[in-house]
Image (cartoon, rainbow, N blue to C red; front, side, top):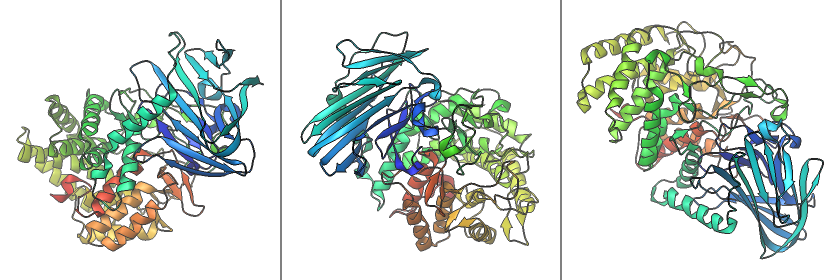
Length: 600
């Protein structure tokens, strides 16, 4: 049975990733890409679906773990009556070869500890038992099935029992025993063996050199740094695309059906991610993400999607893996995401806002960027007044979602600013007129004067935490009575122990059974709104409450259940960490608005 979501830590190589549990078990690993089929899939089932565990043989032990400072190298220390030993987990950065290496070094710290190892390889999300044979010299094994091959090298004797590879060995103080697992395509020659201890030092040095977080002057520097490292780890370096999370089907409700594949790139994250990177000094990563966005959005505007694959792939067909029982019984287990077919009017606004931020920080140098934006605006002109599925990708039918209309306003507002402030050419008078028209309609149809709050969709009785973005994108100032009323209403009606739900779960708007956790990004938005309203003490209280939800190594999932104290949803969640970075900067010594345009 899987651990709690917060009991896992992430390691990765900026192309793929693995989750390591406190019990020393790697229960999730996809290679060569984040969205490749997993060959350790115990996270969504049982050990028989694939895992690699290294831990003391005795059942009685304590665990301490940490990331090395400013690094993605993980250290898990096991303490037993006979001594202590540390398992160091990491993935070397890509070398240009078509391979992924997963390295674990067992280091003796004190006394002597008897360790046990269990390696269960199952390709295709736990469905396929590979053919296995010993390497020459008996120092490991080779496993193959279809396109996948895995080479495993061990410094200790191993044996195979019922399609499992196991070992038992002692490690004493001062000893270091490296275990190496390498994936490559089965039709390629076996890759050369890597020198694990040299790779450890090189990997740790690379991450420390990349981080540079000591230059950030902020009381929450450590949290910002860990979030930046997590974003880098979730970046697919060949294209610059940033995946929403490293996992699929971690549930938004234990035992529920809200289980989605998040190993793709969402357009909606674009402007906030660029902003988080540039204000933290990572212009190269921000530029790569902007260029990925331009490539993905290119084409006919009526074919614009809300999400794409790591290289901009458009077909993300959804299917169910019925042989997996799901994380703690949450079924179905899904791969692919049918929401890519949805109509979401906010997407164009997100793109225009992203390029607005890029111009602000002089990241936009591609001459095609403005032409692509103009084409998207032309389409939006005749379509903004229609219905859509909204920011939360509901499956209960299209509506006139207020947030979507606000983001249509953002699209034309950023277009006007592009002409006025950046000297670009376009029908600015027409865009100004459309901007005013949308603004008037949203204030008239999306605002309930009786409740003194904007509502989820036109005529709805329900609220939506996405409405907290109204002042953050500059639609209305934070001091406007309608904004204040909306913030107070959302805080009053959607709060659970100080954390916000996305929307009321009993409205039926999403077409799914009731029940999910509070949404961490929405709660970060609350802190930002309070700060913009001048209530910085309350904002800091909300932010500190969010920081306390991070797990012991500083990671956040998408959601949180304040009743049980457990994280929920896919993990780690890029958007949660993006909003942590932005809010920390907002509340730090120098005030930065979460959206560049909001300060204008």
